[in-house]
Length: 592
Ligand code: SAH
Image (cartoon, rainbow, N blue to C red):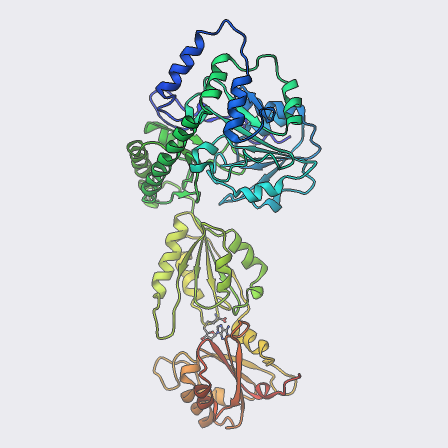
């Protein structure tokens, strides 16, 4: 049994006298007057034993289900206990982070529970649920992440021989109850758990229900005591299922969207705070640079701690969406706490990290395993125009992509700006991947980026990459060494032409080489470079192969000689990125 976190901690333990309550997600201005009047009326009939028929019929009608598919419960909490005590799972799986009561109930009933713990941004990949699971518990929208999983993925989890418990306690806070499966009687083993607590402000009444196939409903009902719900609770279940009440909840859901947008917009100004993207519930999950919960209490705000949810730590907070004024006051307090947090005050800030990842020549398959691991864990990717740019489209939603490209003759981000950006992002606590084309240290200014990070105390890792200097020739069947033809190869930058005062290249020495010369960034200076090599003694008919966009779909090769290279490339319209290979290896006959 997992005992690492307190599964019995709930938001109500986080609130306290005099604190603004952002910890509990119950609507603060509820129950509405009309509902209170109905409940008060029910008190006049307390002498009679409660009869469930009308409430059950109303709930069934609200969801388009049959009455025998409905089990009314003393809040969603009772539903989880009934399920845990009635079902006999051999392999129970709970998808975390989520409301902890279902797991607590399963464990209390003696079942072993396997956790599937999602990583940020907490979207569910149904393939993560083991095939052998015969009980799966998942929340939608999920408490505490506020993530709404697509209905199709959840439906795909349902199959004969498996019970899928879908906690939809917050589904009515989503406009149109999007992605809800409450109306789906056709999905085998589906149990949808609903609550009236949040939207209707009825936490103290204890009323909820589940929707399942009639056979399971009967089994669960047999585990309930007689008269499990009080007459006022039944009155609430019936009243909140009317078309008018559902419309009222829908309007409140729309209002919540506006309030959430407001909270998101003000939170964006707080340094170092990350919000789990795609929130659709009446709360947000935040990650702050450090644990600020007790300081927030000192400032008058109670938030829900994150560390009692499996998969989260003390820097995570769940914050209820409230009216704009309350959100503004909360964000101002958070801002004050974190603005004081500059390193000079000596307050420890979690520092993120930078990985200088060599992305290879462009084909995503040529990225290293380490590089791929780091990309999968990145919060931000600072990318170039070269390298495996196709991978940027496959990053998890919410991963920020920063463009640091230098286009020859076009828009360029100055190197100093990129250095500063890497440091800044890491100091916000982010895991930064600096994705570079080829190898980070081959004409890529990787050293400057490393030095900037080291100077700022940012941890930095360097992951070598497959350089285009070797990969582009290889992709065009040009080996850079060959037992007879080339016993050395030299990789040279053609960024500045021979004779330019900025050049440190000894072109005369290169001209005397017998082996292979690999030129990068040389396309636009090919005329000057070949002239310098010929002047230095390299034969005019030395074979040359120019490989454009090596390993990418646009790859093409121009085969020529040293004296004709500039003209042939111009005629063929060769454009960067291209690698120029000079030497006997460039003239080897194709093997095909
Ligand atoms: N660090 C990179 C090189 C950066 S300099 C590496 O190790 O590959 C940029 C030059 O690399 C381009 O001008 C071009 O000469 C070469 N280059 C990068 N990707 C290439 C590709 N897919 N095909 C051919 N040349 C490429």
